[in-house]
Image (cartoon, rainbow, N blue to C red; front, top):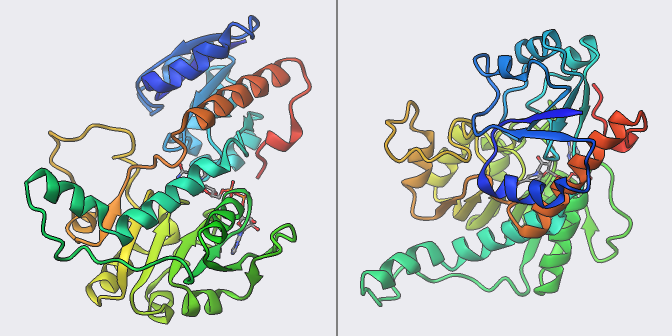
Length: 330
Ligand code: NAI
């Protein structure tokens, strides 16, 4: 099986190359460029393409892949909201993902953002480098004894619940399907989580139902001085309303690993670009906001797991026995 990898960085190649020799039946070619209307033609002659979280796998791209004989799309990530699944079904292209690589990697990043923005580590780091040892503006709060509100308690949300519980927080949560393994978590409705939490962390997938679940109405319900963290998908939060909320002084801090309009930025060095929109710049203009660029997954353990499951997905498909749980359907 010949697989064309799009949008690869050195750390991707490293983790896949380390395992590739165990899969002699798979022939891998890496491209740095992402899949697009211009680069999709490079997939001619390949059985599969492997793409990542920000890759454009819209209907047009899917049809172009099908025309070139591609039968399998390997997502080396968990989320699949960037894929037109209906088009894949129509073109008889199988889509496989890595549903569960290292939930702790993302949960720990959510926690890192929470700690950093609460204790102003982003400001303190710069200040000390400038020989400014003043503590003005650096006061945070103790998390111990406070309430964490976790929205979505699947694999990552559950890891976040455990982490928050571990630092002495009371954990309340909202999920359509409560996780009975989390005995220490108090499940409640979304409104109660919004109204009672000191830290709110989002861990549900982006669906039609969850799109903009954090809008102005939701923000107004939150406690004054709440800390909001999103490591899930940008469009769970209406950025326009978030900016209004920040200007209303609603938040003590906001930590975003994902945000709307991140697509063009994600994993690119754009330091010499004049950006077309001002969303990122506006978010970055607030002293109590930390933005990272979709790096929640970026740990050695997660990269290894992603490589292993992706190569197993390819092998299983090739052998006619794909892991059913990893196939994404409409
Ligand atoms: P999961 O499928 O294990 O858990 C999602 C949970 O959300 C489930 O328990 C589900 O019942 C719940 N849910 C679904 N719809 C809901 C709704 N309307 N209201 C409340 N809860 C709802 O998914 P997992 O692995 O925990 O991932 C969560 C999200 O994290 C992914 O969808 C992805 O968008 C994001 N992610 C971000 C990464 C990053 O690098 N920042 C890396 C990997 C995933």
